[in-house]
Image (cartoon, rainbow, N blue to C red; front, side):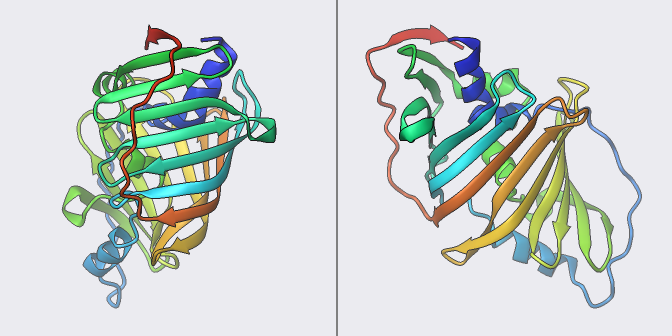
Length: 254
């Protein structure tokens, strides 16, 4: 795969995953108290009720902008995530011409390079492990949050709650904005490198009674790269199967 196309793929969709393989875990022990009239459990129930990845969704119109990467520019984006966690993504250039298609079905992952008529194929579990990513990386990309039992409160005030989620290999420091009852930013930690990834979520919209960010920004700690994902139209709830159908292109392993 030419480096240009490879970066357009990995940075546009999978890069949002690899970005999660970022900084070393940072332990925080200081806790603040919530105001007496704010219930932590009620907040967590409200935030998790807004998760959009559990039942899947379809991005019918979106775009992704890349800066500071080998490939820079703005690309069109279509995507589908079903309730089983299977994923389809299509990165498009001018006039809507598909440049790259990403498929993740079961434990198979494929990146289809339309321009060079090549397919890069591998096992999802292996790709995730290699890049220090957890299996629920889609929840991270779209700002969903684990259940209350899987997070630890770090600090709180009347405007926001900061919680930590993860294990010895991976950690998220998540800021929940109480005005929106959604994750509004997070820092991603992993033990595979010294980089720091910061993600910000904004311009919240609603589909099917679920609130989601229509603007997602990600940058590396030293601003080596910047990614902006814009969602113009999202439909919550997608239960159709996603087929792992590949064209007759030359195949290479990840």
